[in-house]
Image (cartoon, rainbow, N blue to C red):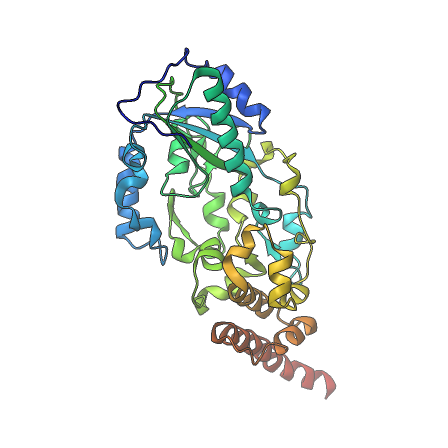
Length: 372
């Protein structure tokens, strides 16, 4: 990043053309670039209402920075423009629907099958800023990739990279929604791009498919019910009423994106770092549940999954194993951790074993009848 003092005047050549910026971005692997202003007044109101309703759950950091999340110039002084980029991440992997339909398999959100995107995108954005500085002279900037209080989807919308869909994800007409976002806050007076119109129409597939009914209304998400929140951000017990709806999803959820008609235009990523690692696109729940803590740390080094820690990993898989009712391998895997020293893991394992026991009890009369 680069900063100046108000007294320092830097020589600067003419600003780059929009096409020059996009060419630079494309050379670094970004699939689109746009420029937004810093006015997010309507989004600030939406954020305030969302926080006031408590829909952020235990994500206290969502409220910790006040409204700087919606005010770029307060977060980074002298910011007058935001360069927004997107990068496709959809990997070549086992078909998502096939994994979700297999109760023995572990479903991991497509974005987390490969290496963590944060460092890759941050390095690329820093390189973009440095190349721009080499071309026009030094300027103030700061790079963000899901790493600070930034309304990245709102800024990307303002930069013309897509519209915010009813599931609250950004959608592009020509790229769907399987992409990451990143930003460069800057003092360069670049020409801004125009937002694109929304094209969800009357479609509500994302709302109807949500396993936990977390999309409580169009454009309104209650994170406390969202599987991505429950399996990644939430550090306590998963509410019992929601556990059956998790199915075999052990890290994140893609259902709302899988049914979105605009994802027929999504492009698979060419980034090797986003390709599945350690067979995570086709791993069995029992195999992953057997990992010891050091194995978890070693195998998931460089993965976004590692950030949730070993106990949440086991908690999530225990729920999924509990949903694999009637599976002997699932029951055996759970029994191996029945006496886990971690109370969070132990409670979820016991719940899962109880689910299997209930299935046995409900099935026993029919077995007796068949033998009589």
